Image (tube, rainbow, N blue to C red; front, side, top):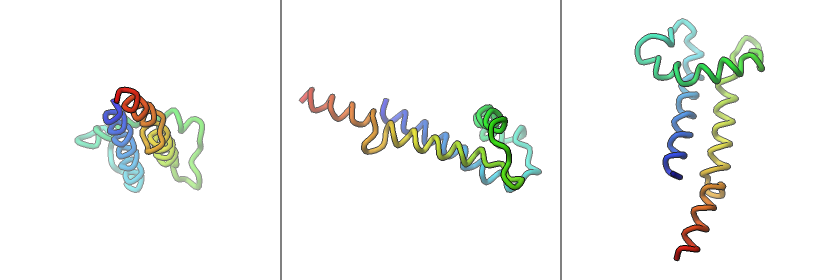
Length: 96
């Protein structure tokens, strides 16, 4: 569970990092080819966030916001001092 959650959150971070890079190429269509693998899972969250956060200087900052949020959640849950990590450590101490 711990590893799967960490991998899932890392994968989301990677997808949003790809979205940041893809904002440099606005002519690319995220609904075609392999770019769908980046656009499809991230667009619902970005679309919602764009309603709350306007572009700054014409730059869409919503992927950056999601990278920060997901990184924070990953650290709080599965980081060295994360909640899930601490629960697993305590469970292994009690079981031993």
